[in-house]
Amino acid sequence: MHKVVVLADSETATGYRLAGVEVVEASSETAVKALEQLIVQGDYGLVAVDSGLIADPAKAAERAMRGRDLPILLPIPSLKDAFSTDTVDAKAYMGKLVRDTIGFDIKL
Image (cartoon, rainbow, N blue to C red; front, top):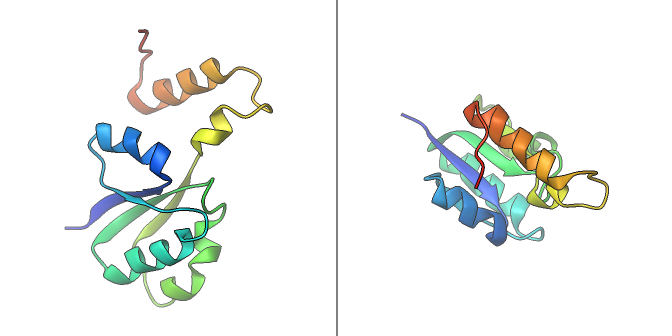
C-alpha cells in the first residue's frame, strides 16, 4: 500500500502535521533533491509539492520519474500565495480552500 506525503517548507509543514499528514520539510535549495529521494524511495503513491518550493514538480523530477508510474506528483498552492499582495482577499482565498477541501465553512 502506497502512502501520501507533502513536501513543504517548515512553516507550512506544521499545518499539514496538525492535519495528520506525513510531511517532509525542505527549503527552496533542497526541495528538488528531497523530491527525487521521495520518488526513488518507492513508498509513496502521491507526493504533494508546495508550489512555493517547486513550481513544476513533474519537470523538476523528470529524470527521477523516468520509467516509473508512481508517485503521482501534485503541485499544491503555497501558503505564501494565499497572503501575497496580488491576492485581493486572503480570508476569502483561505475560506475557498477550506470549503473545496472539506465541503463546508469553518468560522472561528
